[in-house]
Length: 317
Image (cartoon, helix red, strand yellow):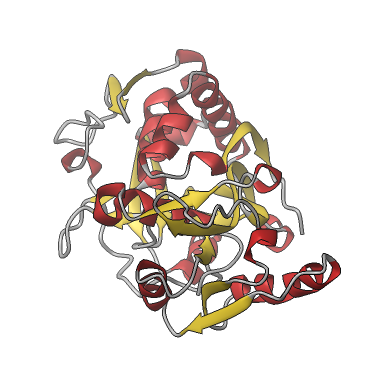
């Protein structure tokens, strides 16, 4: 189910964790067929070269293997997706960011599908070095893994292209029909906002609930509602891809750039590898500073959720 953060507490789908992704076959990361780290990689139109100092700062075992073993739960658009149904090659924001980090560090980020609720235990067991799976950084998980935070996201508002109702904030939904999937935190968000509508002397939001997100989207498409509230990453991806970007757009409230109820999402790293988390943090900051991160996030329609500073363990709960 969608939540204020872009990653569910349970698995998006039960896929086999035994399929090792040989990333050389996918995208434009430049890896050779043998899986050796590329000399440079081109991600989202940016060429990224190895930083020798960051490579030297990696743990000995990572430098020796040349690989960071990364767990991910697929699919969860736009963070992790299969390039084609029935094929093992991956794409998505997390995948691209992983390839960019690998190129900067001079190693290969090898992604393996893993059921979401088994990711952290698998890191603890030493099966993986890290995870990139739109995972919310929270205090409970911090007890067993470290996080390098790369996005902050929550709930967003999607409207039809052109935003004819001029929706700019949640307040603009007062007295109007808004679609939301039932039994989600987005529904809770709208219900909690009713008191603010009343306090402002406005009518309550006419909340229209639907069993599936796709049903709520259909209601918006057919003008039965003025907006749909869902996770901001999902809204951004839908707006970018539906009818080649001509069907919907996302409302960007300056007071909630990453979305309402936003929380940090991070790369989970084994606590046994503090040098790796430090190196990833520095590599991520370098990619933020040179604009690569913005271009990767923008490729998936979610530039507003990218962080401007690579923090560690920045949970808000």
